[in-house]
Figure: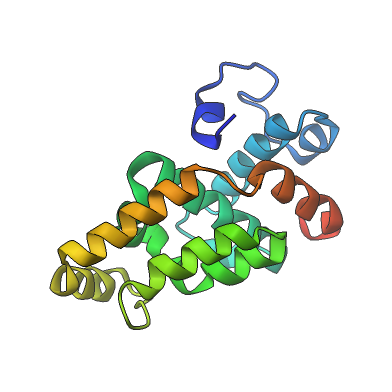
Length: 170
């Protein structure tokens, strides 16, 4: 089940209960990943303050943020939205959870721009607007398709990453 579909899931086990004690008791991997994502969204005030995250939480948050954005509107949406602030951390984050195929897809998407991607949203939007081309669009669409093939089991990898770094998730 893809993350976007899981968020739509009407499951009272997840809905409305994001305290850590409850999250650690979840035995279904998908339910756990969704609940942890919701917890970190709230903890960061929905991305407004990611400085409150531990390094491990940040890695998880970045991988989940990219997945939600690509499922919703592709890599292009990711880069244009505030989530694009994490662009330069994507490859490392996916590598850290063991999602090497996804890390390679992210590297290809980033490389399409031929330069570092600014962390500042306004600077990044300006750069993206100037660089828009059919070639970049084609590469990003290829990356969207490759990502959505889910060569890596992102839920399982994220779950295992959290369990290995449990003390960092608070």
